[in-house]
Length: 300
Image 1: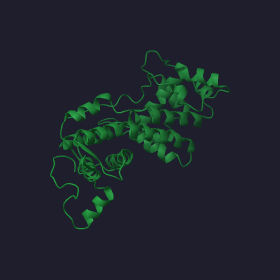
Image 2: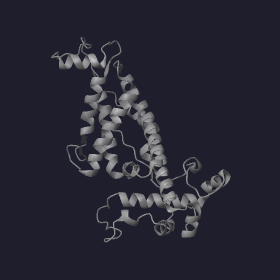
Image 3: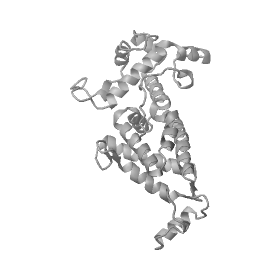
Image 4: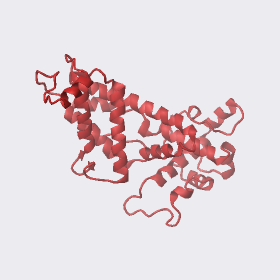
């Protein structure tokens, strides 16, 4: 079974912050570059990411809320909260002391810090990072298409409630109505996500000796599958239901939905039935795929 783990959300090792941050409080490009490379800048951002994850994730079993009176979304990213969180920095190369003045020196007004923090969360966090290098090989090694789709669907569904990444995306999406600058990182995030996963989907289809029907592109299929995963992920987060994900039994509706979508979008390599003709035949009362006179084991 495919099983990968997302990295620590606050780990910004090897991240080129100069290409991510847009609101550093410096007049020149050189000054902004130096500030972005300053360890203190990374320390403030990592502290904010930890606070963001704490506010958006449910408490673990037995863990009490940080403040029973004030909801964490009210004041979880105030300057003082961020500075206090810097003291919890575990990375040995980063400063463990910060100050309100130091944070204000880098970002003023504080909204600029919040926007750069969300950009960092969207562009560098695991939810939008490339598919782990071993994932495609693990999936293809499973052999048959149902096992492949089941492994991908279950791994994805199980990761959603355990990590803050998806919630970051939802928060940023809601804020775009008042913060249009978040549109850019959201678009980049989706492009990265789709480009990465399309390689996996394309490899799964090709490994079974199939191709996409005329009228369906790999980009279209990836967008549909990712939208499906996103919609069901929202259900997993907002209203957990064993029909959507039964972690104990290892079943998820994502598997059934993805197989239903794939089976209508692919055909054997020697097939010539377009997607539109396939659907017309189905709804026209023909119960056999007009492009599948010879039965084959696989996705179609």
